Amino acid sequence: MAEEQIAKGEEFARKAERKIFCGCCAVLGSNYEEAAELFKKSATSFKLAKSWDKAGSVYIKLSKCHMKLDSKYEAANAYVDAAHCYKKISTKGAIPCLKQAVTLFTEVGRHVMAAKHCKEIGELYELGQDAENAKTYFERAAELYEPEDATTTVIQCKAKVAQFSAQLKEFQKAMKIYEDIARQSLNSNLLKYGVRGYLLNSGICQLCLGDVVAINNTLERYQDLDPTFSRTREYQFLADLAASIDTEDVEKFTRAVKEFESATPLDAWKSNLLLRVKDALKAREMEDGDLT
Image (cartoon, rainbow, N blue to C red; front, side, top):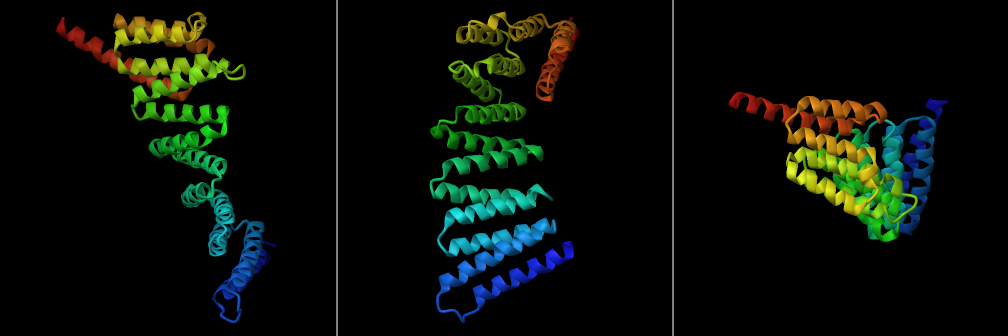
């Protein structure tokens, strides 16, 4: 069955190529329209055979046909189809196709489509543990979604930008984003329950900077932003961590983390940043011990 579909796909592709390069038709546009239909059939056959690489390459040829026919929107969709075929085997082929689609969707004013695929690119970079590029594309997605009044998706994308900013040690930027989306979420009954999580993340970023005075000022600012925050476990956790840093007490820091985690498991992002804070605290404790 697969071999039969591959043979069909190859035959449709050959016919499409002949339509393009054969000079026997008087109307060039007609050539590309017929070639486009044949490329679609070819890609479908390759997909049925699960020959994803071949299907992806045919969709790219289909996109070029649509460009010749001055249909950027259809060309963009063909690049998306190519990307989704390549995703079955590797992100390396998928990402360039999605980038082409984003460019074309943007050019024809389809900003929601462009945003959707920017987000998809960010997710693929995230899978590949490429924090820098993931941050860039989630940031671009948020910018494109923002004018479209897609508040929930904008906040999701911005949260990702903050996450990757912190991973890249851009703690001030991460803090600002988390505070901004916390403030934005307070205005929505649907989103306000995420506020304490965003403020906790922002506070952890502040802890990474190691300035005790700034940490305490930050906690006061969070209370001004959301008066209910001071009654949460997240606030008490940050206050306990700040106190342990102030007294350079590693044991107290470790105890606070264990107590919080016994009720609320920490994800890898928080755990990694808190380990960074703990290591810095240990180093300061050792330095002070050497001085005495």
